[in-house]
Length: 112
Length: 112
Image (cartoon, rainbow over all chains, first blue to last red; front, side):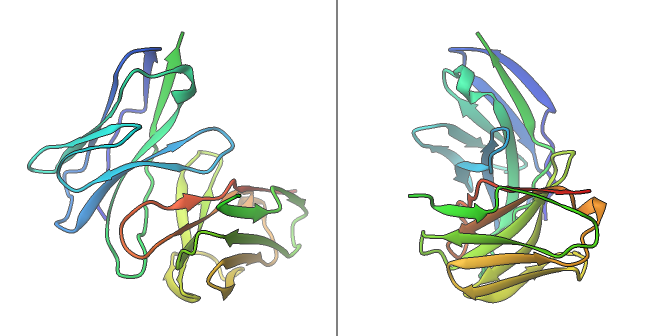
């Protein structure tokens, strides 16, 4: 499975846009890129998933360049409640389930 | 309605004991997982079941035995508990293939 590299932590202020970049140089053809969010004492929560180009949902946008060796999670206008750990994962679509490999994640701290 | 539920939420026990953690999902998913998050916050997959069949079995001691009585349940039984088993255990579920996994609230196991 492709290994991912993310910044250990980031600080931001309320109302700002936050971009978290993830490197995955060894991504395979069948791999999808998925981002999860985890609050303290809770299980991870799915944010967004993409294969190439750009994906947007009500929570975030995911930008994937043509070579797919990196991806950027964009959180528009963050609030204090967005303070959490954000995980970038890369994995293939196994026929019987998706084996998620979590890295260390990025601790995002949003300040007022 | 809780999508993925785990019981108990907290479990404190002594070394050498045998304990079980139960997981249930009401999402109609056909794949369920167990993850372990240690004190350093790394989240690692332990097992995955698809339609009651074991499909992922990571390098986990034989003391850990998952059991899936039906598609909606995946229980984790741990024999002869050790100090190093102390962690938060998360159950998750998903449909087959890529896409989001839904995580339960976690069970914090403390072995003394």
